[in-house]
Length: 330
Image (cartoon, rainbow, N blue to C red):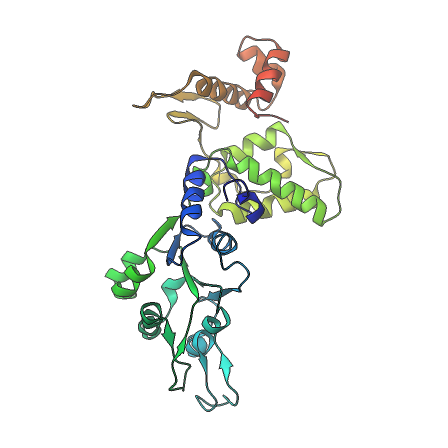
């Protein structure tokens, strides 16, 4: 799995993502119920599908129950199915989403909005592996593997009486916290490159690359919309830019979310290029410091390599070599 995670759309070498991928490898072969937590746009559904595809039940269906988009009065029927006569207009038997996920995986997306009256029924399914269709008396077995996802603090929902505590603990067997994009370091640039390739191919346009000014802007942005926002920004740039090299002014983002950029542990770079280094208790490598000093100089020089080389008192060629070494430039 570690070698193939990018084939599942999971891109990133940052420490938080590597920890997440190691956990994925451990739990994917099991039927353990997993709670996927994270901000909107971080990729919870993508991670859920990756767990399914890496599991022994990958040949089975992957079914998503989108709790936010199913009307409350139809929720029980959609999730558990119904028998003829269960309610007005219920003329035929209908399989619910749980039944449709037999032999595979069901993702309960945004589980926090599931009506309280259905939470007890779901708890029963998780504990007994059996369910009844709405209006039915027969019990049906299910071998479905369940995953749940939320962008809300479910324990707070429990304390407020909106979510059953027993269901919370039954779902939260293995919690997986997906880090926000702002905490994933240079994963931003790796994901941006992936989207560049995806959208140039999809829209049939010439290949694009990120210029230095675009790289600095992408690295300095806070990404409140996470990976979903980055995807939209890159697709828009691909469609609206005729140049081969995408510049900062080709990226349509809210500049109010421009921030100081974290580099290696203990190092931050301000918007103006000021560098702050604090030695962590566990130390840091000189190579990490050198990398961030170069990033700071490039930011201070607004991406101009010649000016950055002057600031660092080295030749332009030497700086070019280091930019390539640290994968900081075009």
